[in-house]
Image 1 (cartoon, rainbow, N blue to C red):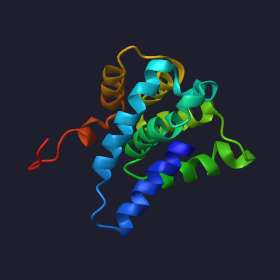
Image 2 (cartoon, rainbow, N blue to C red; image 1 turned 180 degrees about the horizontal axis):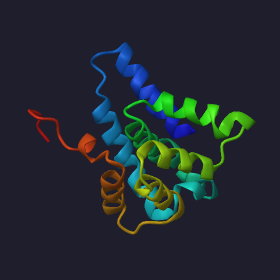
Image 3 (cartoon, rainbow, N blue to C red; image 1 turned 45 degrees about the vertical axis):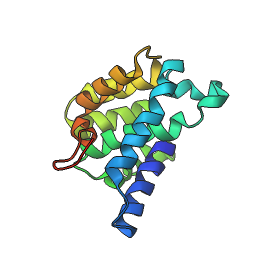
Image 4 (spheres, rainbow, N blue to C red; image 1 turned 90 degrees about the vertical axis):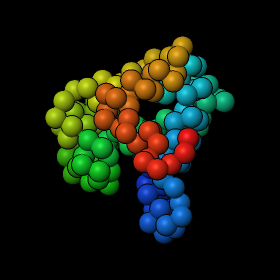
Length: 149
């Protein structure tokens, strides 16, 4: 949930301030996420006091994958969760991942999310590269045409 709120904050800031660079902020979230993955999966970050930001930084990338799978509409993804499995007032991990599978039309995205949630990654950059490819968000982390790196 923190990552979804983070992504929504990026989108809201960009809507209010045309100078706000969402791609840059997402790249910063990705860079911030990487060290946490070396320590363990995002789901267990609560056990590591110094890793609380994993829920925000890595979570924003997970939310971005859901947004991409849902045609660029993260709020619509959340509304689908609330109207469907969340109608009982709770959305479980399994329900969240099933909704991701449903909107993406494949199981690659949910498997990639599960991998970030559950495992430590000795090479976090490679793990995030795989995640970006599997979830279809890799183009968001390549320099835009005409920009310098």
